Every structure is written in structure tokens, then in C-alpha cells.
Image (tube, rainbow, N blue to C red; front, side, top):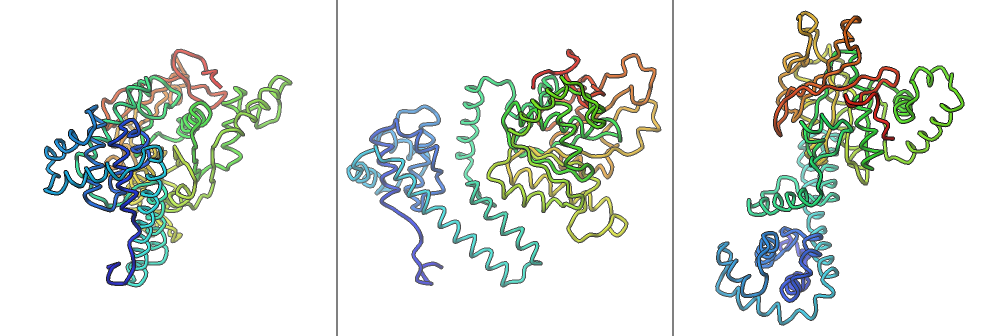
Length: 448
């Protein structure tokens, strides 16, 4: 198409060859290259095949030189009659590997220009073909541009060999990190042992009846991720104001009872603790939106516009509408709307490649049972949520139902669904004065 229109495709064959030549004459520069480039950023198919082979050899710890490269290309079935002569020419023409990062930068720049052109063509086609309303076209356009900014492709078929290499690298990184969990820690170690933390692309549903502490545990997790793990956290609250949320965060961070914060009756020491906590909280990267009419599309768009986001928290699902049309629940099928919302949230988690925590109400079904612990079928409009969620955690506190309970502060985080492994019940400590949760072995986690 570009040739027919008289346009030249952004490319640099010389830079692509210089990158490959550098990797062959000095294999020690390979880590620098694979940190920057991916195989699909090469325009020439033969350069792409050579790079994929070198990437595979390095990943599996094989010796890299022109002879072993040719042998490996034969094994992979990407060797042709002129390949050997082509590789020899590349090695002879590459002056030095010292400038490999500059060569790689040129290749990456041309690849981004090509993809930007493809995205522009796609957007233009949607506009002129009338394939949707303006809002849906804008959403699709933003999604494509975000994918370019984050260095990912949408709807792109990858060979399994490339995916295997990526998984292999992830395994190496996990082994080198020494961490027992691959995801973002929640600050509740016993829960992390079951869920393996909050992992990229996951939709995590935290469900409970009103008053059980859904918002509290979500804020616990958000505060730990931002303050202890230095993550960027986006919180979208459809129920509480920004000020209410920050008051709760301050109470937890300062370990000052929330009642004292609300009434202003603070001791001199509590004022100092609040000031220290406020300073620490101000240094975190927590973003809060309290728009009660927000949609998943709005949330996704806001997150895409951030330079970085590591965790998204939404409070809560049943308050959301499936579109920005302003329709009330009575004018649409509630079950269908919740199905649409849960599906869009899962798509958003995959697209942003971050964990998304969404709070959800449980139906009244549990109230009629002798054992009021939540089960999956208690999720309101549960079918779609069960299907889309990677992890479902139900909260339960016996002390909420029974004021005479032996241990009124015992809380249970019941992992009802876990795509990564087992389901289990994790005991937590409810700390009512801070509207917070902690590990069972401590009264509170004084880790802030």
C-alpha cells in the first residue's frame, strides 16, 4: 500500500544489520540489545529471524558466534541458501559494537513510526467507514496509541518460541529476585501465600456484605503498595469522597483512631503522628478519583494517560453504569450491565497489564443461612463476575453478626476462586479503631 501511494516505509536496514553484527562480534552486548529491542521491531524478515535466533540462544545460555548461529537457524527452520553469505557480510560491515545502543535506538524509532502509521490508518478507516459512535472510535484510538506508548501490540500473533523465551526470562527474574511471590505484596503475608500477590493482568474481586470492611482492606492494600512497594496506585471511588478516603489512609498510616480524626480530638502526640503520616502519604504516588458516575471506559482512559500505573482499585462494581449514557439500572438489565462491566474490567487489566482490584457487594442470600460465610453464588449477578475474575476473595467477620462472639475481631479472607492455585481461608485481625485489617499474629502492623 505504501509503495502504491508513493510513500517510503520507515526503516533502516543498515541499523538492523549493525545491531545483529554487534551481537555476533561481541556477545557481551546482547543483554543491552534485548533490553531495548524485540524481534517484531525489525523490518527485514531475515534480520528478524536472525535476531529471534540470537535471542533464543542467549536465553538458553548457548554459545553465540556465526557458526553456532547458522547451526541454530537450521534447527529452527529459518535458514536459506543465502543466509550464510548474508551473516558473513553483516559481520564484515559492522565497524564496532561500542555503538550498539545507538543502532538499536534507530531500529526502535523506525519501528515506532511504522506502527504509528498503521494506527493512524486504522483510526482513519474507523472514522470514514462509520464503524461506531464517536466515543467508541475515540476509545479504540486511545487504546491503540496507549499500546504504542507501552511498547505492546494489539491483536498480534506471536510464535510460541518467542513466548517461551519471555516466560523463561520471567522465571529467571523471579529466581534472582528471591521473593516468594511474583506479584505486588498486599501487606497481608498469609493472604499473599495463597494468591501469590497481585499479579499483572489480573482482575481481583473482593466481595462482602455491607459493613464487612471491603473498602478498608482495599485501602490497606493500596497504602502498602504505594508506601512500602513504591507503586503508583489509582483509586476510583464511586461511594466515598476523596477526603473520606484520605482520612482513612491517614488513620491507618498514623495508627490514630479514625474517630479522633473525624472529631478533631487529638492529643499532642497524635498531632505529631498525623503530621508524620501526612508527610509520608504525600510522598506516595496515589491518585484518587471520586466521580460517582464514572465508567470502565473512563477509568481505562485515565489510567492510559498516566505515565505509569501499577495497581487500580475500584470501589465498587454495583455502583457503576456500563456506559456513559446516564441510564439507570431500572432502564437496563442489571445482570447484563454487570456482565459488561466485569468483562470490560478484565480487558482493562490485560490491556494496562496491571492488577485491578474491584470491590463487589454480596447478595442477601447468605443472611438466610446458618453459616453466613460467603460463597461464589452469593455474588450479585455472579455468573459473569465468576467467569471474568482471576481471584475472588470473600470477607467475613463473625463479630459483625454475633456481638457475643468469642473473638469479635477475627476476620476471614476466604479465597473463593484462584486461577493460580489453591483456594483457602486466611485469618486476619480486624482493627476497628483504624477501620483496618492486619495479620493475625499482631494487633496491628506497625510498618509505616
